[in-house]
Amino acid sequence: MTDETITTVGTRLSFRDYFGAFRMRVGAEREKYRVAPGIYKVGAPSLSSPVFVSANYKMSFDFLRRGLSGINAWILVLNTRGVNVWCAAGKKTFSTNEIVRMVKESELENFVSHRELILPQLSAPGVSAHEVMKKSGFKVRFGPIRAEDIKRFMANGKKADAEMRTVTFNIWERFILTPRELTSRITTSFYIISAIFIISSAGNETLVRGLFGTTAYFIGLFAGTIVTPLLLPWLPGRSFALKGAVTGIILGSLFCFLFGGHGNMATAAMLIFAMSVSSYTAITFTGATPFTSPTGVEKEMRRAIPLQIAAVVLSCGLWIGNSFIGGGL
Amino acid sequence: MKSFRYLEGVSTLRLDKEACIGCGMCINVCPHRVFEIVSKKAEIIDKEVCMECGACAMNCPVNALNVTPGVGCASYILQTWIKKDKAACGCGGHACC
Image 1: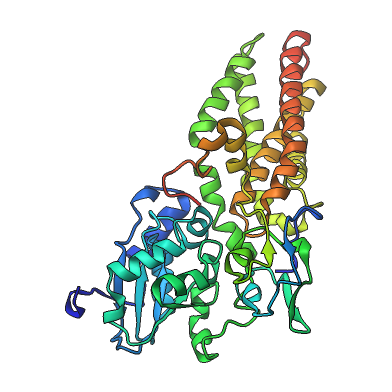
Image 2: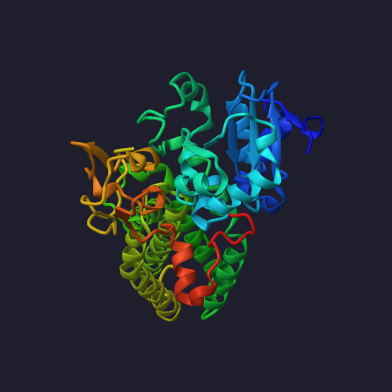
């Protein structure tokens, strides 16, 4: 590869870039959102310009080049199979060996006179800095977590301060993850709603009862996938299952209060079902957070999942029982 | 991110202070400020915020850190229960998370 054949990329994201990011947030065609691995130029880099390493998930690449505005630099894109930096590091596709391989394949040593790579800090679970040094001769320097801090990092003598090194999870960062929590459940929701209608067909008024059950499901889903993530720090306890159960009960109660007139058994069935759905979907949000440990999640699941299953069985029992006893719905 | 804390007393993180050379790499890579250098050695100052990402153990040049690394994701763990070793990332798609 020669210098002339290398693509120069801009640091301003276009509408298409932002639209692509939006599509990823809602989960459309995620497997196609990739950048070709290799070297890219930002500005007019020279032999002494810094080298930033990134994943080939396009959003990771876009956020990096946006963070490099005003800086002349090289970007080395690894092949992480279209997965973002942190998840790829967890899966070991953003790894020591992948860096060593790409440094060789791209002939990076012909483009720079120094021997230093700047990596996003969140790649550290997959990359051993001293092993990269040993295997490629390039020194690894871990940069800030967020690309927007790169300028401050460079001005700070290529040192990330405590703030740049600490992950955040503010309400906006939580909010942008929620659409994907919903859209990833379309197929499952179809099966669950079908099951609700089948169970509701015991007795009369299948349609009305089915719609009532479906409403309970959507309340639980909304509570667990949207409300719980947004209100995360203010909900009681540490357990996601508990936080989800609370939002499910509250939203379910609100619905029953506003659209009352159902029998006690139907109301109880609805509340318990909404609570279970919310509790389960909330626990799966652990996968999107940057602070839950695998040991902690497994411990919580061992306690919560049997209870969630028992609660669903109980609510189905109440629902079917209600159709025979009658009363309200 | 001191406002977010998960379950207490679960982290598998361990530090061998004898082996530690005080290079500070663990501090550079930890996203939760678990470590500090105290009299030229690393010290675990807040174990409860550790999310077991494994970055510190991966980057400790003298293997003074030990942690069972993994991803704290319920969908993934559920898959490991059901499919054992065939578990993929739990997000359903090809390019997830």
